[in-house]
Image (cartoon, rainbow, N blue to C red; front, side, top):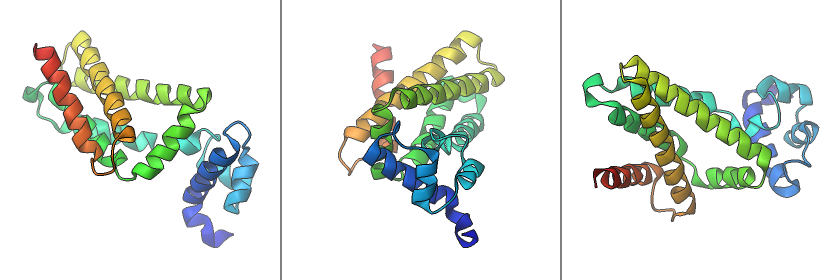
Length: 187
């Protein structure tokens, strides 16, 4: 099995997605996932803390890229432009594989424990954006409002992209959602 170790995480992720779809999240064990991937449970735990994390692997990378994009915006451009840059970075990263994203989202939508984990991930992103804005000198109330508005735009755009046609990409949907929010708040 050692020759497969380089792609063990990917194999485990695909096995989990397949089994969660066939059996359901609750009915699938770590041993099932590892066996389906041709690996051991020990190998599973080298890559993931638990069976939920198979669906959330990469969250830290997403968070890092979003904060880096926010930090790269010049301070005079203001908090909402910084949040917009962060959302653009997320859209580019997450918008690569709609079929995978739809499968993953369907699994999350079907399970309360996974929905809770998704909410925790989004709260962590909001907190990181707020903290990034605070480092830029944005007042605390404004930093919180801008970060939470960004998360609302993210969620709405994500849902629309998931339900939309395959010819529209996530960055375009994210940009349109931001434009709609700006138009609504200008009125």
